[in-house]
Image (cartoon, rainbow, N blue to C red):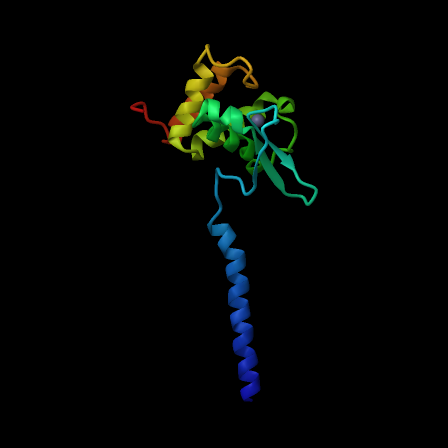
Length: 160
Ligand SMILES: [Zn+2]
């Protein structure tokens, strides 16, 4: 009888731990920071996302470009991650249809950090930015879409 009680207690504890393992990741879902990020100085994009052989994903970014563009880099990393969050197929950045690009931008505008959003908009609107920066799509249209989405989500402040 005593033995049975002990087994029951152990089982209950295991159940509790198991339950927490399932609940924890769900509660701590991070909307903008990818699970795995890799810095690659030879990466030709600012940031992109790739599928791994074990069916996960990794966000790769160029640290030199990131030093150059500062806080805006966070936006582009989050943009790459957004493709995963939005269930887009993970392909090379230039192959995404414009709608997917707008959706990923909008996602970051909604959930991203305000300083990074503002920095990205500034960069997209800056006609004198480094021409070697790989920016896909029309930068002005992207900037306007980002501002619209951020405003709609209450994640935009003009004062900054
Ligand atoms: Zn994209």
